Image (tube, rainbow, N blue to C red; front, side):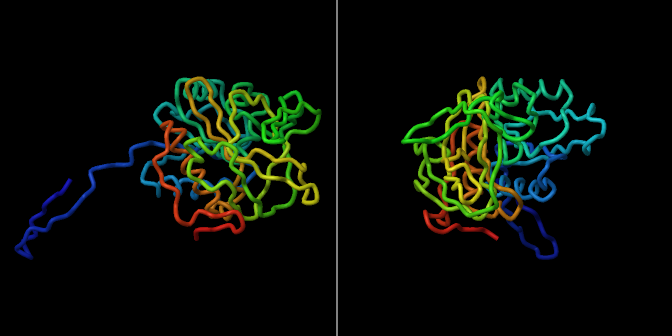
Length: 290
């Protein structure tokens, strides 16, 4: 839409082009408690969504750890996608139910990095996230999910849920090339030095592994191809689980940025309209955006 304004001092009409199109989708980032630096990562997560032009973004910040949570009730239903950057105290039952109803009814959810460690005893949350770690999780939480010999294997070997070696650069390998999030991405691409999550385990219901990375034993890993990009169908809702991105520094990696942006759009709408950018990394060298 074009708005015309009369500027008397100049004696002319100034033509100002003003976009009448706001961002088509609404996103909510939930934070406030986390064993990781949520104060550092939430601004980056917000900016990355906004720069697509697809999202307006709000943030719901919980009370600090140990304080009264009874008033923490984000209006999930007002949004097309919710991004969880939360790992901490239990939410009120009403808030838990609101998230379950939202996703089950067709809402989108993005589980970012250490949010997979949240709520080990909340059954529906574990169903929504597919795989989790830490918080006392073990074989009672469900299987490990591995990529072996060209297929997904659910491994019920007893053991811990969640772990990683020291930060290291690693290569992701696409396992579902026809999914909207990964369509058009190269089969293999490098990520910057980051926590390579391993030993995640959980219900793994309706879970699709989009990409894995090999976690070598000599670098503190499991010697398995670990799932790091996943989707989960929960009721009518879509969940994208991205295990990358320890700090804001790792969020500069194009190997994080593009799957995150595309995954959020897919969670919100069921499709991806974003093109694969020219700076997307290949198999040998990570790329960053400052």
